[in-house]
Image (cartoon, rainbow, N blue to C red):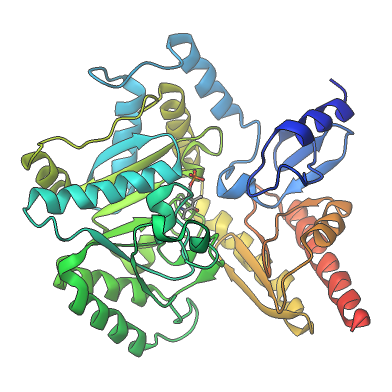
Length: 434
Ligand SMILES: *Cc1c(COP(=O)(O)O)cnc(C)c1O
């Protein structure tokens, strides 16, 4: 197929994330990828500043991951998980339990982050059902969150950016608190935790669990909040008998400078979701982990089993790849790698703060965010970025990067140069138009 034929089929028949079938986007045709580079059909090479949505932490064509898949293929690509288990699942589970927050003991594997969140929410509901407290069946969360696109996940996503209005009265109404205002690098605002306590104390009889992204609110606004917020929230949840679900799907595996973002607050959630970087971005795979209390309460109640079981649960190829990815991460000084990226992003992006069009620059771990004052013209800014050899996917007012951890200093310099130049040019054009 020629590039034109690929694009023609794509335009006519293929949906892409959050797009209109009748007004297709000018998608780039990627032929292959290696290291931190995407290579297009026409030979253009772009640095992937998005890590394919938080996932390709080791970059592309990683020898150890390729090898793990090939070796696993010689045994089996897949086998059902009902009544069957296998070495890749056992080995991955053992490795995960050594590194996740202490106290998480049981792992439920599924095929995507959204499903992992559905599973977490079902665990919370079954937990209270088993305790004979079925009226604890709602969820509390904070605004600006993102937890996936399936039905119950949507109900706990930010009501505005999560498009609750479209699905309106078909979504379960949940309890929303304001998005945390205490910033990661700023002061804790005690009043907002008093507000959290007020809401939890008046609604605890109907709340099964509090769900939120630890420390970094990702797709709902790229916001970094104070570790003590999370720590206090955990304390309030314990006091009011509310389970805490930490959605680590974006933050897990080092992205924020800790292996899991919960570590910033030194907490163990009752239930934790991981995905995205779990397989180093090689394939769709996720897991929901929980404490012995959650697992045993569900299992000792009625119906005595946890009611979920995906066809591709515990997929051996995904387990083998995830294990290889975790081993690769732990075998190197990943903390130093993230710190180097963090300090480069801080230095390189700081100057943008003075631009008229820029509201705020913020950096945490291997995440760099430039928040503009107004919604960006995504097509214009993306064209400017790709012309300078960089792939980013801005949304709303946000132009941001979370590069693969393996990015070299020279590549990172190229990335931030492209980002800074594009944003400056974009900002100047806005000023001229005024
Ligand atoms: C991406 C994401 C999800 C959904 O994961 P999918 O694999 O896209 O279904 C859920 N929660 C968070 C925090 C995410 O970043």
